[in-house]
Length: 412
Image (spheres, rainbow, N blue to C red):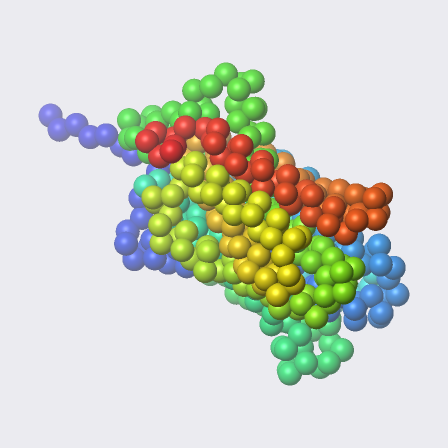
């Protein structure tokens, strides 16, 4: 009598051709999750003028997506467990597309904030769900699939920040900031249609019963609840440290250079900080299966960031571009590898919850860091103190990376 071992619903084996399609979907989802929000800062002066916003209200408009993602990622993880990954991404992309396009239909101050909240909820839900689907669809290639998704996030940041003004000036009109919302919203609608058509179907409440190593109990699953919470905090601050470095440098480079009379360095320094993430993320993608779950990349990134911050403060301004490149590349490496950890370390049924909690803590850390730096600058009137949270986050990377939860032989 022939016996067979059924694969659990958690592992949804894909053919080679379908895997390629899903990899592309992950990449383009990442691009659209960031292009929409990073396309706003280039047109902020126009928005501020036309809607008569204060500087505080203008700053809130750009920081709101980070705050919403940090506040709702954990609850998004709980929702994913109830409705399933494919459905969660569908709703996330729907909210993202709707919020983006509705901003163009009602371009007033209050609708702008309300629809920004709406699209931010879509981003939080989608980004929390992707690691769950990566664990399900690519159990043997978690690092590679997550790195592709992260590549998309970084490419989307670069496209949104770099292409919005040229597109507006060249095709939409020099003052047509409302039309840019439509320009970046249409690709999200196309992506949603492709997702509904091409994404594999999955069950919303998987059952786990296979001896397959990809679905066996993970380190987090085997721990008591208290220790699991400690690991969640560990991963959250690990991800948050890398994100804090990125967002704080973006926040303070221009003001710091102005204070030390090096404003001429700012445009290229910011460009290099953001553009250097792309080769770093692509390199991680190539070696993702070897690097994911290891401790040394986080320790190395922390050491590089500490050196770069010292260099930023004490060396001539002509070297600022070098330090910006090192900081951007290191933060991208940390984000790419840290985002894969919940799928590696959590039990199959707990990936969404751990991912949500990790992202909530991570983005909350990234949101708070720049404010602490600004407060220190105001309190002591020393521009360099704005970068103290970046230095502390770099030290934290070394510590947290050294004590990263063990994942088989990949820990060291």
